[in-house]
Length: 259
Length: 284
Image (cartoon, rainbow over all chains, first blue to last red; front, side, top):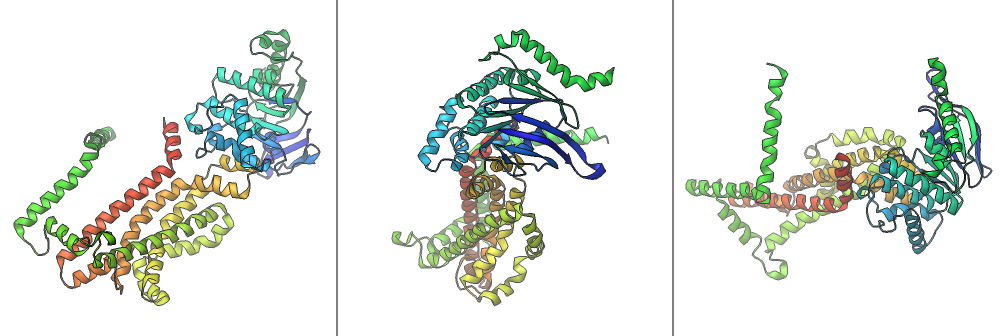
């Protein structure tokens, strides 16, 4: 489904350049949620921007369903940005924000409207279509951004620290929303996060990156029973052990340096 | 003197001044104007100067001269319709051209570095020419008449619209542009659903300046060899030392300016409702 091979990217050139990611390879199967976790500055977002086609990598290849991505946005891609307040258009109503990208897949206006309403219902905002994004709370705005991303049935959804700026309770609700969307729609999801619990709880696999430049430190399968639950899953010893291991790997570099 | 003692009265004074309009509110805005008119009336009645007629005389003159016509002519006399309407027409057309040219051109220049490099030197050269200084050039190019006047007004008023739109288009939030890219919006959507709305707040800031310039340049255009219009009447009045007519023109221009500004604000208020709403929240 998604195949990233030996991805390397540097900002700037020559000796003054900053190597952000160095030879990252990863795979995601159809319907899989792959979390990418790592310390800040490890190039998580750079990987995601390369996959989204927003950034042309210096070297390495990216393929979505066998089609190479090289600075062009792959087909069937959706992105949920961290900064929902800036990525939603404040001059459009919630419904119009969700409807806007549907012109790619749905030609009739009635179909677009129906799809948007369906997506808003799926994220629990069926009554908020006529409101404006800035009239909603942060968590609700991020739901709108998720509705916009899933409305046209993407094959691959990229999430760039999507719940970084909402409160803890909302974050848990939104994590469960992502899990249910994957279950219902079989979307492949690449989730970039700095939250270790979130990477384990939401992921089918957790990829741990090292600090600058980003390299893959570990690629761990998550074997937790489905459906996952914010309380019971998190008290399982399998969860506790895995989150400890991921935590150790994320902190690995600093721990060694301190010794 | 220390910095603290210099700065101290500042906020207190600003606070006192800031509260003033709030206390008087809507009525206060008119109170000052009405008081001014009465003061002028009393002063002018006492002096009986030919050069400063009282407001009552000016209003009476405006009524008889322009607004005492039949209802079928919108109460305009032949002098009124023959001069006020042409002026409004020139302003309307010039403003329309300035918007229709300025908004798209501004977005193109603001979004394309290449186009900006080609056009900006020319633009900054042209905009630093005071329009008044080149009236003759416009007369030569367009001959005397409405065409020349419209071209002249347009040349004078397009810059605030154009420059503000360029600035607005250049500073559109990169994330909004990236969102349009990753969701593969069509070109139409990118222009009309993203670029234009994102640019509108700055565009309106420019439009407000352009609207007030329109009035000024309309008068300037009509001072030179026009055969009708508000500016023409005022020019004729001042050449004939008819102070009552000149003051009538001044008052009419003041009213027109007020109405135009209010209309612009009203449109802006409606079109940019989202902008105020979003801004109020982020400033909290």
